[in-house]
Length: 289
Image (tube, rainbow, N blue to C red; front, side, top):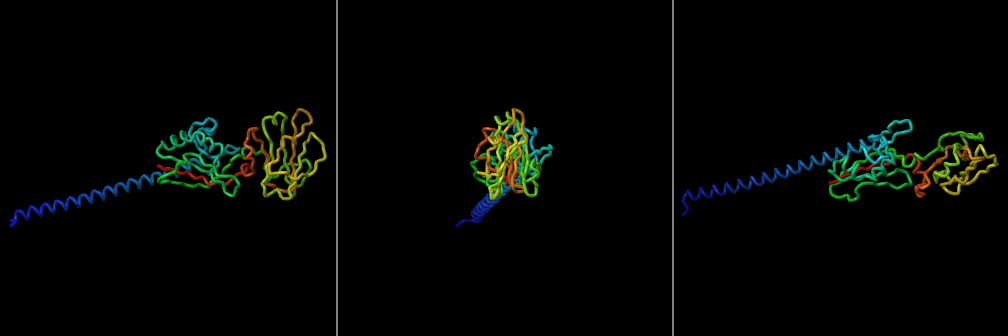
């Protein structure tokens, strides 16, 4: 028979085992809670980081303001208008493309210190043009995302005249029944640039136009646009080697059409009216580990 001393030893051993089990459970639970707290803090910090970064990008043009011309500096995406004012909640397409060309250095390293991988996307609203995405394409794991509604200019910087606004007319056309405007041009300019009239496809029904200049006196007749992109270089006449003032007339008021001057190497498939007007876009910034 086991004496009392043997029973006491067994009881002590059982108590120790139970204590160790409880301690292990407590330590394991504590470790899980700690890991959850760390993960929660990391998640919150990452969400705050990309939210602040998105706001900074769309409200700040960067340092210097024209950093995109040099491919270095501290990037920002906000548009600076003709008056030198920063447009809040806006994205300059030329700055956006500059980021694409040097994304790893300018964004991942400079803005995020290589702590996360990121991507950015511009998604135009109510527009025929496609979204544009830059950055890392290998999205995986826990992805953090923020969305901002912004104004984006795409190729608006190439617009010379917008026919939704009233202009001057050499035929005294009433602007409540017509859209007219003019521009000055030199022969040498045609060697460097291509001029186009770009028309919103929804405007093409019953729309007519004609072009004349102050230097060439001819009877002009209304024409129906053959397409939504009208090449103008071969329609511009010069009296001599000096400049000419070219007038463009539409038979409807406030026509959704723009006169643009683009480089000779401009991509033809981008000659779309929607690319040359101001667009409302969703700016989506994503980050992941």
